[in-house]
Amino acid sequence: MFADRVNHLEAEGAYAVLARAQELERQGCEILHLELGQPDFPTPENIKAKGIQAIRENRTHYTNPSGIQHFRELIAEAAGRQRGLNLSPDMVVVGPGSKPGLFFPTMALVQPGDEVIYPDPGFPTYSAMIGAAGGVGVPIPLSEENQFSFDLNIFDRKISDKTKLIILNSPANPTGGVIPLDDLKHIAEKAQRYGAWVLADEIYSRLVYDGLETAPSIASIDGMLERTVIADGFSKTFAMPGWRLGYSIAPAKLAERLALLVTHSVGSTAEFTQYAGMEGITGPQDFVGSMIAEYQRRRDRMVELVNAIPGVHAQTPQGAFYVFPNIKSFGISSKEIQRRLLEEAGVAVLAGTDFGAGGSGYIRLAYATSMEIIERAMEKIDRFFRALSS
Image 1 (cartoon, one colour):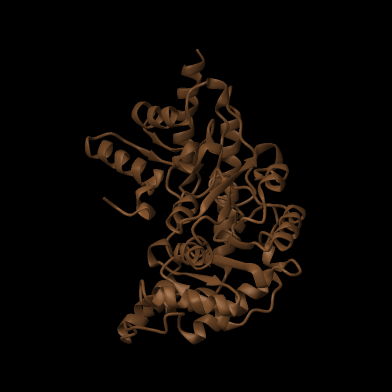
Image 2 (cartoon, one colour; image 1 turned 180 degrees about the horizontal axis):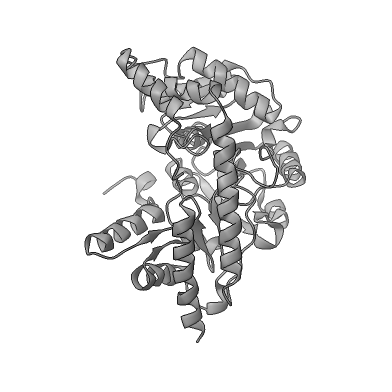
C-alpha cells in the first residue's frame, strides 16, 4: 500500500517509552525519567530575550532557505574556530533542527543500492534515513573494549567500492563514546581510498569532559573537508531543543543541493529562531561551561552508582549525557529490562536495542536531569537488579 521508503520506518524508542511513562503517571504512578535525551536546563535568558525581541520586531517571515546570511557567517566562523578549519558561509545550510542535516545529505548523496556504513548501536534516524534513500545499511559495532569507538577490524572488512557514505557520531548517542583522533585518521584514510563521503553527526561536540574543549572532528584531517558533511545545532550546547535550530556544513556545491532540499521541504527556518541562535554564538559562553561542569558532576555520580550494582558495569562516558551500562550478566533482554524497570520500579530508561542490534545487553541512562532524580532513580535501579540476583 505504501512506498518502500516508508515501510521500514519505526518510532524512536524514547518516544514510545515516554508515552507509556506518561500513561502510568496519569494513573497516579510516580515515574523517574532517565530516558529523555534533551537538556534539563532552561534556554539562557539572553537567548530567550533575543528571540522574543525578534518576534516583537516582526522577524517572522521567510528567509533565504540556506539561512540568514549574517547567521551563516557567524556559524562558519564559530564552527571553523572550534575545529581549526577555515569555513565560508556558502558551506553553511541552516535547518529546523539538526535532523535535516542528517536526512538531506543522505538524500543528496546516496543512490538506491549504495552502501552506507553507520554505528551500531547508534541514533535510530541513521538507519531510517538510509532506508528512505534506498541505501543498504552496513552496521559497524561500537566496541565497549575500545571506549565504544568503531571496531576498526570490522570496518576494514566492510568498507568497499560500494561504500558511498560513512556516518560517524562523536560524542555518541547512546554510548557517550568519543572517537579518538587516531581512529578518525584510520577512517579518513579508508574514506579517501574508496572515494566515500563522511557524514559527521557532531551535535554533542562541545559536551565533553575531563578538560577536553571539543571532540576531534574528522573534517579537520587533511583531505577530508571536501568529502565531509558536518551536522550540528543548538539543541544540546545551548539547551534549545524546542527551538528547532541546526545546520549542515558541506562543500559549497553540495551545500547548494542541500539548500534546494530545504527549499522544497520546509522552505526556511523560523526567522526569529535564527536571531536567537545568533545570540547563542555571540553572547556570553559561561552558561555552556557551567552546564558542562554540572553534567560531569552528574556523570561521575551516576557511573559510581551504576558500578556499585552487582552484575552491572559501565564505562565512564567521555561526552554527551548518557551512561550505557552493560547488563548482560542477567541473561534478560534489554527490552524486558526496560519494561520491568518502568512497570515495577517506576524508572524510565531505554533498551540498548532501541539503537540497533549492537545495543543488546545494554540500557541507556540519561543524566540530563537533576542530581536528586539521579540519586532516587539509581536507588530504585539498584534494588531492582539486586532482587533479580537473589
